[in-house]
Length: 286
Image 1 (cartoon, rainbow, N blue to C red):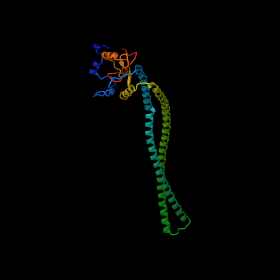
Image 2 (cartoon, rainbow, N blue to C red):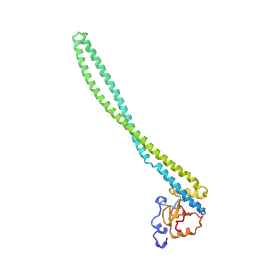
Image 3 (cartoon, helix red, strand yellow):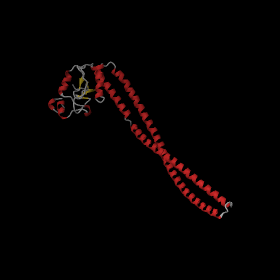
Image 4 (cartoon, rainbow, N blue to C red):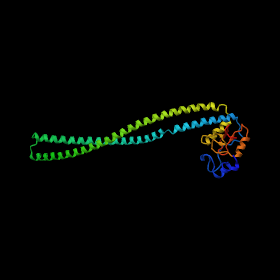
């Protein structure tokens, strides 16, 4: 890149925008990067292998993200909340039905008690067991009072029965909805588990490949890479292709390219913009 062009050099970018992913750079203060001390050196082949490790780690990160963001997770959480609400309402409805059933049983008992008394008094009058006119008149008035009481209790009994039917209907509806929610939860859980199983298998395969990929690599290089990955959203190393950093996607200016050309092949290069390890390849454009 020619500095005189002024279109994409880093000196020009500093005045306009910071560059790269905004999440990589704090708004105030310097970037937090490991203190390396002396320049790190590593075999060029080890540096190239680092790109393979990065690819595996990125793939593993993607799989973990997929695993934690399956659509079934949110659907199950939403359905569980709705199911819990239905369960609470069904429990309340069951209490209402039970209370009304108790009330109905009491009214039924009261009706039967009054009817029994009416039958007893009628039988005594029909059998001629009451001969005193005043007692007969009193008994007749009492029978009329019992009839009114029976009518009132039977009206109350019908009212309670209607309430019981309504409450039972509500309980049946809620019970059915709870059962339907359970069925849907079972379906969603099975789908989630099936997808999770597939992703887990893919993740295990990727993780199994990482061991051989890092075997024999210099420990300082891996330590730096891991620390940068932790700080840089999972990307600690990137390829330099077509004079562009694969990490922050910014083009290098002529001065930076000259510095990289002058560096020995075993020197570990860092992107001045995002501080990631910058791996030189045949496509770097140097």
